[in-house]
Length: 267
Image (cartoon, rainbow, N blue to C red; front, side, top):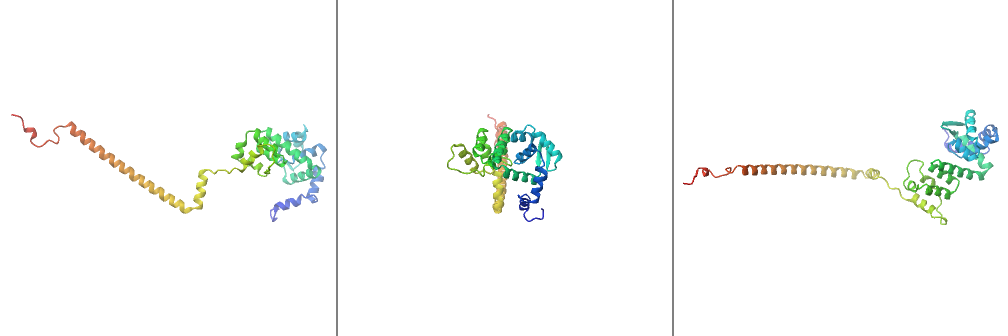
């Protein structure tokens, strides 16, 4: 696969309906499982990572967590990540999703809605919005943001994936029945301001001459400031000397008298 000119297309070809690999995984891995195990695998294939609690939410099967543990021990296509989370091999996950779409296409959106509500209850709003978007349920996605008072996280996204990423494919309709979708659309479309430091660095990169001129101006300002400081110090010293002389004359009344004046005594 590393030498294939288009690895993505190569994987797609591997898991097409009539591919040998797809037939093997379906026949030897999926169809060999009991119905309840098969249902858990197909239902949780929509998740990037599956957990026992999420599996119970999606399937309604209280034994889903135990089923995932057992399958992970017996099957190399499911890897435990710790703390009750599991990761499906990408090829296996793609085969499961393909099989789910073929067997029960209407159930895909339902599973994404259930996943969205489960992630919302567990405080993972970005994942909740992503699943609501994959279900095409934009009122649900918008409602979770508004109810969670998270519109500021759409305006100023942080981290990846961000909350705003889930709304990039949201259609700009003219007939929304509620004002909330318009609010989220405006928040997503709002230009994101760059930090001043980033903007200045980009400006320097685009105009290196301006950077040199800026440095020269700074050096001139610094030199001028130093000269101004030296002038102020010199002026202070001269004022101090004049004040000292004035105090000396005030304390010595004979200082500065004409010669012989002290010898004239009235007769």
